[in-house]
Length: 206
Image 1 (spheres, rainbow, N blue to C red):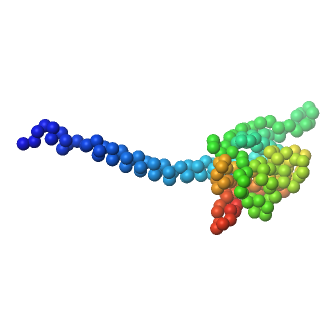
Image 2: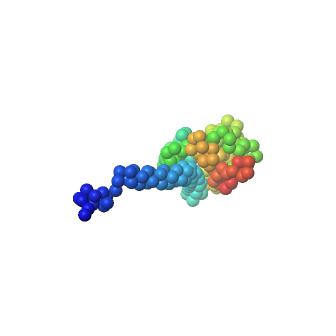
C-alpha cells in the first residue's frame, strides 16, 4: 500500500527535473535571440536607408509638382529637415520655411565607416571623399550638408550650381550595415545602395 508521501512524489516534479526544464527553455530562448538580433540590426539600417531615400525623393517630387524650390538639410547624427522656398512679397528675396523634420532610427546615423569602397567603386560612381554627407561633389566651396531641388527636378547648391551628392547611413562600428543614397545634380536622379560582400570584395549594389 502506497503512503501519502510516496503518492505525492509520484505525481509531482523533482527539483532536478524543474531545473533541467528551465535550462532547456533558457537555451532555446538564447538561441532564438541570437538568431533574431542580426535581423533586427539589419532592419534598423534598412529603415535608415528608406527614410533618407524617401525624404530626398519627396523633396524632389514636391519641387516638381508644386513648381517650387525645396531644400533638404542633413544634420549629424541623424536629422533631416525639409524646407520650402518662399519669396518675400516686399523684398522679393527667396527664403526657406521649415516644413518637416525627421530623425533616423536610434542606433543608426549619417556615417561613412572606414572600409567602404572608394574611388570608382562609390555609389553611382560619384567621387566621394569618405564624408558621411557630401553634397559638394563637383563644386568647390559649397555646403556639404544641403541640397536644393528645383521645379525642373535638378539638384543645386546654395549658389545655384549643379550639385551631385551621396549620403551614407549605418550602425556605427558595423561596416556591412552601411547604406547610401546618391543624387545626380543634372537630373535629380536618386538611388539607394546597399554594401554587399562579393568574394573578397565589398561592393555597392542597388
